[in-house]
Length: 107
Length: 125
Image 1: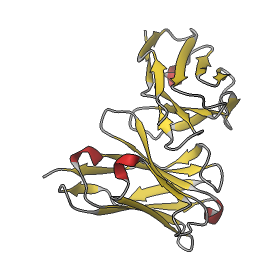
Image 2: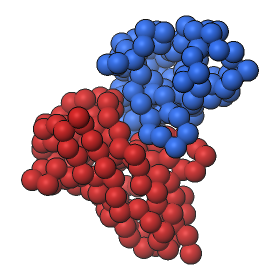
Image 3: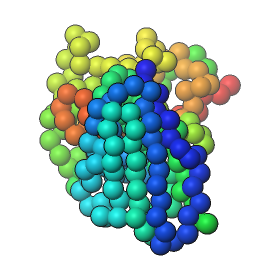
């Protein structure tokens, strides 16, 4: 099983600032990496797939990068609606696995 | 618009069974693979199972996470636009919100573009 490790666990950021979230895979997942956003009491929402492609309707302030084992989600200028938990997920191997999540909170 | 609506959750004793349903609408159901993903209270996401678009019963188009193999069975009824998760021999550690999620493809090899709102399963005596 591929273990996905996200860091940091919690990120405190002020509105308007940049947030950088990391995700590391225990073995290569190529570019088969997705990012999801989850707000309290809601289902996850797809943000990024293929490591760097924004899903339909996702604002340009969200960007993804990386390949193989190291990935990054960047939110260029945090808006109030962006405070949430973010998960990475690999879809290169079975079973599909998620990182433990990074909570982005208001500083 | 794409909608996935889960049902069937509730409180169940350890060792008992429960069947979850996920009713889909707004897309051609038979063309897509469907997954179940769960989230224990206050915890992260855990992928559970997937069934491909044709739902063939030879076992080649269904995958499960190890912790549910032999206990959970995923199935689908394309005539009812519904996917199911039959959960047997339930354990306390199966307590979670169970989400139904659509794969972007028919094989189940990709990521999840739409999610339901989830249904809570609590395993407790």
